[in-house]
Structures are given as structure tokens and as C-alpha cells.
Amino acid sequence: MKIESKNLPRGQAELTVEISVEEFQPFLEQAAKKISEAIKIPGFRPGKAGLDIIKAKVGEADIWQEAFEPAVKKTLLNAISEQKLDVVGQPQVDVVKLAPGNPVVYKAVVSLLPTLTLGDYKSVEVKEKPIEIKADAVEKVLVDLQKMRASEVVVDRPAKKGDKVEIDFETFLDKIPLDNGKNLNHPVIIGDQNFIPGFSDQLIDLKKGEEKTFQLKFPEKYHQKNLEGKLVDFKVKVNEVSQRTLPELNDDFAKALGEFKTLAEAKEKIKENLEHEAEHEEEHRLEDEVVEKLIGIATFGEIPDLLANAEAKKMVEELSHNIQAQGLKFEDYLAHMKKTRDDLLLDFAPQAIKRVKSALIIREIAKQENIKVSDEEINAEAERMLNYYGHDPEIKKNLETPAYKDYLANVLTSKKTMEAIMGWSVK
Image (cartoon, rainbow, N blue to C red; front, top):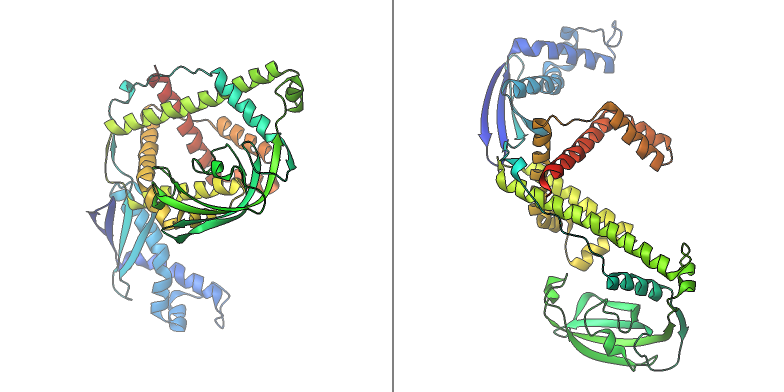
């Protein structure tokens, strides 16, 4: 077998493989056997007709075609090993020559695992920030809980601050209706700033059935880029005004939450929860800072498109899952953002490359520090997941596959490596 290799741009390599007629012969015999199992040949049991008999029956070209794929699978693995290439993903194979009686030649384009030189990763330092939960943060949570438990009564009077108003509204930019800018029976709490500043204040003194047009300037930073800092016209109609009465913040209110006896106890628990949230946020901040610094001191070869694209697709799927978990449709989100999935893939490209680099660094540090997980740790994680899903038989079957065990091993190894990195980096 002859092999030629050359590097291509964007983290790829091209292998040209030539298989001699003699080397190809065993694959021809296997192909003939497979064909003979699928067709009837008088005088022979399925799979027992020889190569010459099958050649006379179906033609030599069909046998060579059938033999090609198995030959590629075996010889390409040997070629990759011989050239000492670290490849990722599936290769792209193209036939160069496949003619009976001649050597078989094909080209395979493979994506290469990027080369990586770690810097002095144990010299990286990050500093923890002290966590302090102030009283006003606890009070804000209490007020939010208070608002969620407000009682509402429909009233026939002008709306005032604190009321809930259901409205129909339309939005216009330069007198042109905005896409998805029409909303029906939209609830607004006057005084809350959940939309754009000043919107709810425009509803004060309006009664059921009344209409109003007004203009507001959108914030300079807004999720819809086409509206940032723009003056937008609104046309509003009030459908209903409801007076909201907030419960008093006392021990009875705390008891109504279901798990407390006193307001003081509720405040203490809220403070604990906020501290846990702040701790998790600080952990993520420190991890992000460490990864940024590790990437900054490392040297990478070219990142193949295959890895970057796969990570970007994963990020889009994560976003889709999160949006659907909120009870929304991902297609509606895309329409609202005026983007397609391909647009998101492009938007996520820089972050996807960063995530690929992060994974490569963690993988290499695990290798250098000899960080591994045991079969017991893998099995314990599989059991934990099985308990979480209620011992579903189908899930149990998937968890026990070698491929999923390998996946768990990679996840747990990465987690253990990150814990080690944080152990020597956080000061």
C-alpha cells in the first residue's frame, strides 16, 4: 500500500492511498461472498459461490464497487496510524481510480486534532471576590414574592401606579409597523419596568376602552439591534384595569409561602439561597477567568472547521432547549430576533472556538497530570442518572452501552481536571 500525505489549510490533511491488486484481492473475495448471500445462484447455497462464479453472474465492476468501502475502512485506519495523524470526525473520501485489474486509488480529507503547547499552566492565578448579601437584596426577593401573591379586582376607573392593565398595542418605526410588533391582551403592571423605560407610565389615567398614541426612545443597548436608540411610535388600547392589593409582609405571609413560621425565618432562608447563587456565580466567574488565562498562554495549531461547527451547533441546541424549557417555541424566538439557525451559528463561532480551545487544554492537562476516573466512578454516575430518570428501562439500556460509558468517562475526567486546575489557581 502506497500513502502520500499533505497538509491542507484550516486544520486538515489529505491522504492519497493506493491499494495494489494483490492487496485488494481479499476484499474482492469478501464482496463476492456478500453478493452471493443476497442472490440465488443455481447449484450453490447462499454465500458459497466463488469469486469467478459471482463475476460471471453480476460482472466484475459490481464486485469491485462492493469491495471498495470495506477496503477503505481498513486501509484508511492503517494509513492514519502510519502517518501518525490525530484525526477527529469522519473523513471525506473520494475515488480516484476503481477499475478491475488496476490498483485502487482514493483520496481522504481528514480533520486533524489541533496541536497544542501548554504554557506554564500552574502559574495562572485568579483571586476570589468576597460574597456579601446585603439586606436590600433580600428585601427585593420578598417584594417580588409579595407581588406574585397580590390579589386582583377589575375596576372601572382610570389606571394608576400599581394597577395591572391588559392592553392591545402596536409598534411603528418611521410609521411602518414592526414585525411581531402587535400584541393582544398584554398584561402590564404600572410602575414595573419590564418592557422599555417609561412605557407603563404612559398608561396612567387611561380607562377601559380608551386609546392612546405616544412615542418612546428604545435603550441604546437592546436585544433587537434595529431598535437600539430609535424613537418608536406606540398605539395602545386598554382592555381592562385591575387593582392589585399586596399582602402584608409579616409572619402570616411567611407561613403562606409554605415552609416558614416567621418572616425572620423566611428572610434568613432567602439570604442563604442568595448566598448559594452568588457562590455558584463566583465559581463560574473564576472558571471563566482561569480558562481565558490558560488560552492566553497556550499555543494552538489550526482549529478545523469540523470542531468549531460542531461546537456552534451544540450551542444552538443548548439555546433551543433553554427557550423551550421556558414554554416558548424556538421558531418564535428566531422570528422575534429576525435570525435563522445559520445566523446563530455565525454569531456563536467565536465562542465555539473558545470552547474548543478550553476542551483541548483540559484534555491535555488531564494527560500531563495523569488525571483519570475509575470504573467505580463511572458506574456511580450512571446509577445516579438512572435514579434521576426513575430507572427507565430504555435509559438504562443506553447508559450501559460502551459509547455512553466513554462519554461519562470524558465528562467526569474533565470535571476532575477542572477541579484540580481551580485548586492550584484560586488564591
